[in-house]
Amino acid sequence: MGNLLYIEQGWRYTAYVASAIIFILFVVVSLVIGRYNVSLEIYPKGGILNSPIVPIDCSQVCKPGNSLLIDNLIAIGTACALAPLAFVAFVNCRFLKSVETNLPRFLRDILQGTDSGLILPKALLEAAKQDYGPVSYQMGIAMTKFSMGYDFGQSVMGAAQKMRHPFAPQVGQIISEAYVAGGKTHEVLSSSVNLFNDLEQYNQQRQSELKPYTQLVYISIGIYLIIALIIVNNFIVPFVKTVPASGVTGTHFLNIPTGGVSYFISIFYISGLLQCVFAGMVAGKIVDRSATAGLRHSLILIGVTIVAFSILGVILGYKLLP
Image 1 (spheres, rainbow, N blue to C red):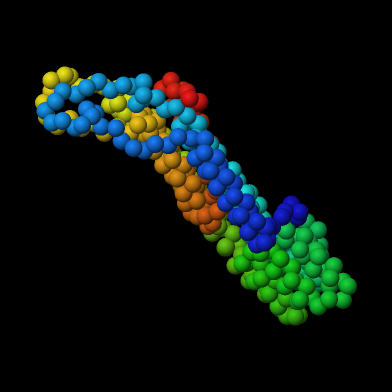
Image 2 (cartoon, helix red, strand yellow; image 1 turned 120 degrees about the horizontal axis):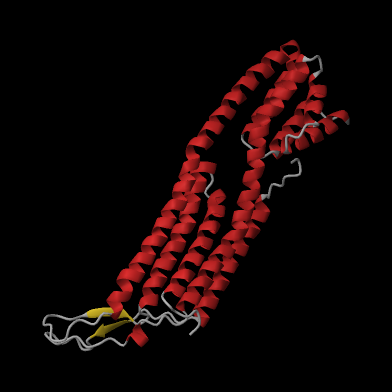
């Protein structure tokens, strides 16, 4: 695990630009080949009061044309645009989690080495031979520099800075202080090990308590998709196709978008995409303390949404192409 990567800020900016270009490209392509017409047709035409309702030509109003295909293109474009950001966030989050998990173990190993009679640099070198991910890798480099004549404290602090985690400089400072503490090395390391053990237990407890919130996000999106299916299939379609009885008096304005049922499907579809993106980010912020770390959940939810609305289109008997 020592070869885990951390993507630096310059490459992150590249990912941001690439995501923006991909999203704009897909939206432009969708608008070019699609036909979104949000104007309203009023039935009966002219809006005459106290006149019977005339039948609606469902072959024109209820036919979605290629709107479902365009919605799918927008959804796929959103997923493709989020993919570079999700990859960067996932790689960096995995790196930081490895550092956070292995720092207490690394300190415990150093303490055991010094208690067994090893001097601190030797104990640190032996601990670096274990698989502690980026911690072992960076501390191994630090000890190589020390053996070549570099200052011990500077070598350790330089390695700690490259770990990118807020705890790492503190651990580096502790090791440096233990090196100059002489006979009090055990006391310095022992108190630090106790502190980081408590932090490790706290993080594990926090993860176990907050993990159900990720499941709640998935459940909420599933509920939204089911409700959208029910509304479109059981309410929107009958509403558009139903023709009121002739001779009913009153004000008869039936405002229906020219896209018909596909207009409402698009509304639910785009709304679902927005919910998927932000729901995943909320899950990442709660569990991983980073909104971008939750984009992997957003990608999964977008995939589920694409499948759900494609199945909805098949169920309603609509064509993906005009």
